Length: 85
Image: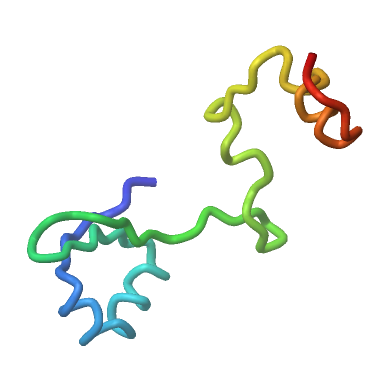
């Protein structure tokens, strides 16, 4: 689905929030600006048939090192109260 995109300034958004909310519900997307500089996007949520946000929306965007779950000896020493040697 291709959404229509409109740029609005923050004062306009504050003044006409209800109007813009109705348009978002119909599928329109807004780029919110502060003194004509874009800083946020307002768009409809992509919901599942149960009305929930889909699980896994960040899939592929977060990368952990292979040793992410490996023990950290320095942290272990801090918990054990032993000195570094």
